[in-house]
Image (cartoon, rainbow over all chains, first blue to last red; front, top):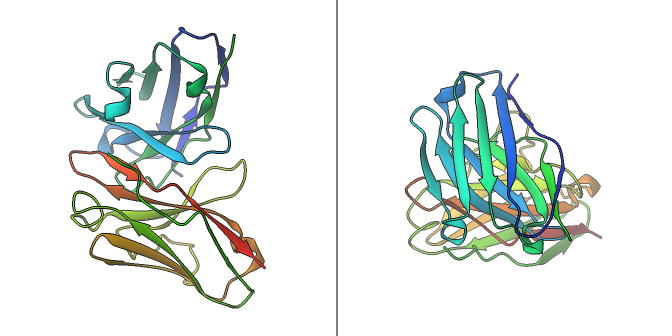
Length: 115
Length: 110
């Protein structure tokens, strides 16, 4: 069955960077694109960006340009999200979600940014 | 992109039907038949309920239906049940592998 398994929770200080991983299984890794979506506590869902694993092409939401990098490691079939210059506003649950349908989601990774 | 516009809350009694609207622009909802709807319980992962505007994934009740007119998509829940009480989000493709979500609607079953 299709699963997307994400890395564990992170606690970071303001100004730091965070890397969250997403490891799909149950299908051919480079067949489908992956979205990254976040949800701040008590808030709605926010689309952050997309990566096409087969060629590494990305599309990053305007709000995150310059701070967000999406990459893939085909040897381990893992997708990475790197977010830099963290502030308290980046405290959120970060999700990876498959395809243009966002049909399968990872379990979420809680990133806390606090001094 | 600006977020799609959803009502903050919608309520209904058991057995009734409710409709949640999702208004975008001609650059997203109006241009593509790629609106999805997600159900999310508190502390849980969002679940895909409707895709491509009106299609239901396997296992989703046929009480959930989707439609679109112009720049507005809608989700209708018929025969409202207690476990339909959750947050609902619309999401539209906006071109070039980009997406935009609505602000979310809290559904309350009275």
